[in-house]
Length: 104
Image (cartoon, rainbow, N blue to C red; front, side, top):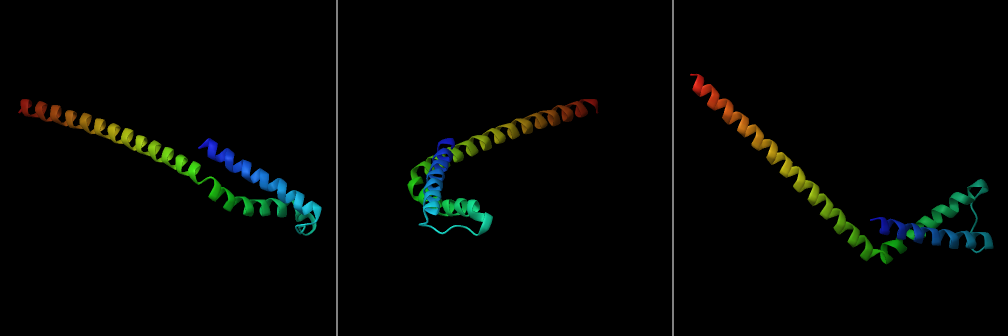
């Protein structure tokens, strides 16, 4: 997951440098007034999103498999814990039922 995030940030940083160069060379339009920095960041974000969607498809699939495995492991641990709690409650009920039948 960290690898995917770093690769995505790398693509964004590359797009940011390219857009910055294009804006300051006059090829791409500048933002209005003081919004030039925000314009460059937003334009780089819009360009990097589809690039990373296509280029990082395999890495995204690997990351999603890891997440699914982690979720399944947590669910299994939770279910095992829940069944242990049920067993303890059942044993307590049985012992309490046996103690009350002996007292009668």
